[in-house]
Image 1 (cartoon, rainbow, N blue to C red):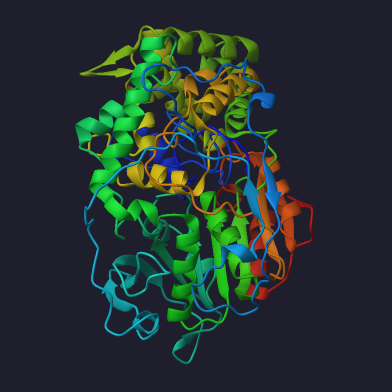
Image 2: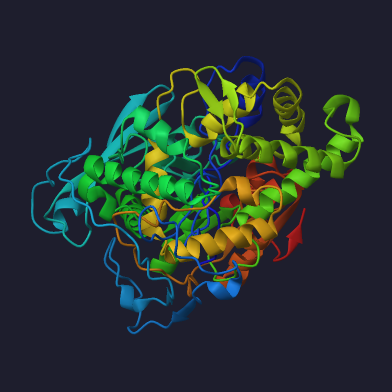
Length: 589
């Protein structure tokens, strides 16, 4: 997998335009708008995450030493991959996984991860259903109850699918039933959807998802393990989490390096103490096994699926593990499943900001940040640099350099729809010295309630899943990657900061699958040419590496082609999911 900065998980979900507008005018509803994610092996890689963090490694606490390089690609370990050593089974048992039957990435060894212990039993831990072995679960049905215009369900799954007689955890989900039915069954079966993350509630997506576009499907959104109302990852107190997100992630001195290293170590230990063994069974491979099990509980022989952002990694992982069980699958705003590191997320945000700066220059009266795109970029760069030593006071808090960059990223997810709000937030901060709008945007992206200061579970589930999914190159690699990011993305590379969260995590990474999904039915990959969170090239790379994939592109800006795209793009999706018509590979809308 590619190396990428760790920036806050998630995706642009329907309704975000209202939320951005509300944020700028009233600071009312807190919204967890999460970013797209890259997964796999990479220095700060794997997934999109908070601009405060990234996958990377450690060294002596407090020394900050370990890089010793000028921050070039040559200073990072080389990624490679090795072929499977066992033959894949055409029809493997439900929710099974044989690592030897898959190609895997090698190269990153996560040398600086901490040990940790914790016997916590997070909410939703349960005894396994009656019986023995997998029969405990294959005899179980989803328990559905009415919840408004939807049906809500729960089901138990093993904490460790390889030990079904052991600890069980809870998965929760929400279903909107098909309007076109065949007897008591949906006419086309069930379609599972996921909004991204990792660590985002899928159930929240269903409340605004356009189920009417897919009348023949029961549409189910579930909270993946560790997130939402499913057995959740937990970490420290609100005050401890505030301290973690307030760390200076762009250190300039040995003392600052010591502080950011110590802060990342402490956060990892807080999560281990509060979540216990859940952290060892939270990977996307575990989630794909859950999804295969859920497929059987709704009685479908194949999986129909639409995933956005990190949701594309869930779908791609499923297709790799169970290729002959893929039905109709659409992967929107693809993460990077390859070892190509030439285009990273921070570069996507830099590019997106330059597009915003061009809009500003053309609309100077409405924007007011500069008469040319270069001036807008220069002024913003100077503003961010100044925050490194002189944060803006916002009540009892401060707008730091990293939080300002995170706030900027929040608006860029929605593309041109949010330009005027980004201009307003920057204007208040740069012209009036009032950082409340950028800080509120950063809070929303990070998972902190704007009004109450409480932290959403996604702030904890995100790093837990990211770090289980992603091998990393240690502190030396993290420092080298940050230097590379600063060269590739001159505006945001530095304020997004060095990624250290996975460096000191207490769980070892899962198998690093090289995804090709040989033998799967056609998979439609969607890409947005101006996507800030999952750069367009990643959709191209996913379509090239997955053997049955076709690429459909939308010329536009923002995150999620399905949510933002035009009728050409949307018709290609509904035509495939509803009618089985595979779009032409290379179609551009």
